[in-house]
Length: 48
Image 1 (cartoon, helix red, strand yellow):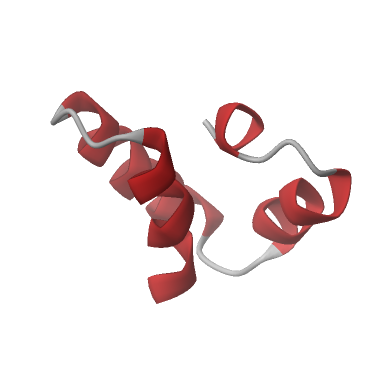
Image 2 (image 1 turned 90 degrees about the horizontal axis):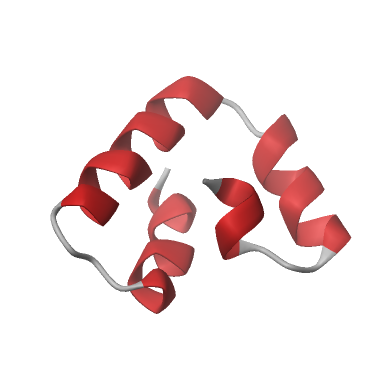
């Protein structure tokens, strides 16, 4: 999921090494299944 949302290596690395990785991934997957747009999902990880 993160690889689809973040193109820049440093942004992707930040997401993959931040706390609560599994929880954030589950949340983003859930939101994507609900139809959330990628630009919305890109902003979502920052709420954690």
